Length: 313
Image 1 (cartoon, rainbow, N blue to C red):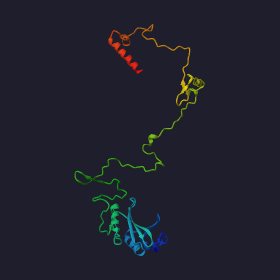
Image 2: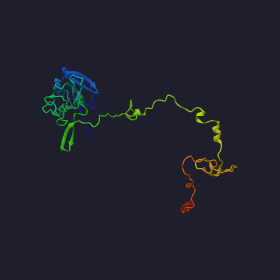
Image 3: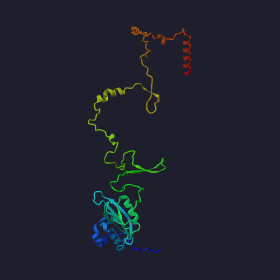
Image 4: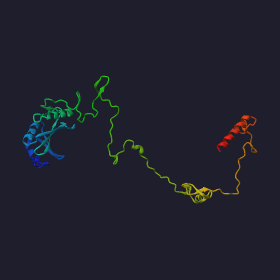
């Protein structure tokens, strides 16, 4: 396969282009600089068509790639119209820009490039810049009846009107903007790096610093000491070797024979000697605790409870 030979270099260099184009533009040039790897030429607004024709015919910048707008509200001539040109034979791009105001039209370059018609309409639609000589200067991006120019810095982000389909009218209707909530800003900071300012809600997590840390350094505050250690070393009952408790490493407590008799059941309070009489008019409760054998139902209920207890055993 034969290699394709082309006069355009693979990588374009600015060497020689800046001086040659500066000399060619001459008095129409008011500013030139190299920015972001591209040459930018500022020219007078009235000579836009003549300068671009010169660059196309004599310096081989054949194509108009785009026309862009920039808004600087603080300037007297607040708009800048930027033309981006491409030379196919040189593989080189340049930017040519001029200044304009709302009431100062820019000469149209539609006689030089046919695609300039739509590009100028976009700049007019977004910024409101007028182009003298464009016979079809209509809006091209916004809707019919749109008010204002959305790329201006003083244009509100929410706009003035909202569009929706009305089920009642069975058509698209225009209404003033009605926001159900205030405009919100979103945080796009990396969660790994974090923001250098408190995010909403973080103020709840702030803990006030502790002036004095409370610690239990004295034995009287902790309950430790020789007496506690000796009490802990005493065995309550010897361990049995017959079985172990899982996870504890000790056997079950073994019964210990002592000479201390087991305590009996306490005597009823009402039968204890020296019990003072009741001070209230409440009746005695012996009927509630002592079964009445004269009632046959009491013996039957007592026998039923005994039988149920035997069955449970």
